[in-house]
Image (cartoon, rainbow, N blue to C red; front, top):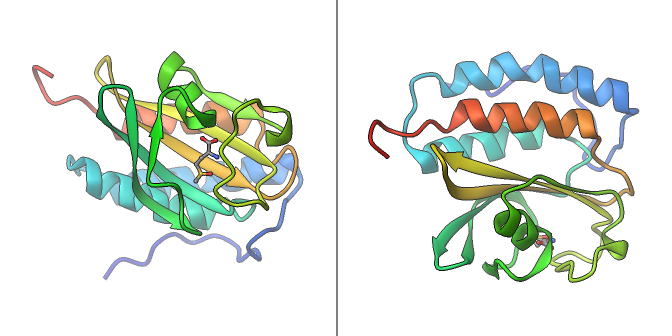
Length: 173
Ligand code: SME
């Protein structure tokens, strides 16, 4: 049976100081990569990442994936947290901005982001990272936090690298 990951227990909703958050993420990384070793199924990978990143990021109130399912359209994928919006067009919200540009969106205060979609009124900051399979955008990783500045640029860079390593294009895709 899988044990998940071994990290100090921190209550959900706690915003640790940034250096502690980065240290916790770095401690979790090898465990997350070991859990995913050899897995090639996108849903299995997304579900496992949603579960393990939820454990790693106690500041998050939502942690999961939106998948590209059509022409400029995202649909919710595996996640942890309260119920998320089911579909998000590329034209809307922070997730849409990430899908549209292919670039990470680090939003320290969602109230200052025009068009932010408030699935949960408690959310104050957000980090959305593109997920590519080869050169194709297949999904975005969405992380929400009820605190302002819940995610840092360093956390964003670490998670970008994790996404790149976790989803590899099958040959010829
Ligand atoms: N806040 C996001 C929508 C997704 S949920 O919050 C789970 C956005 O603006 O794209």
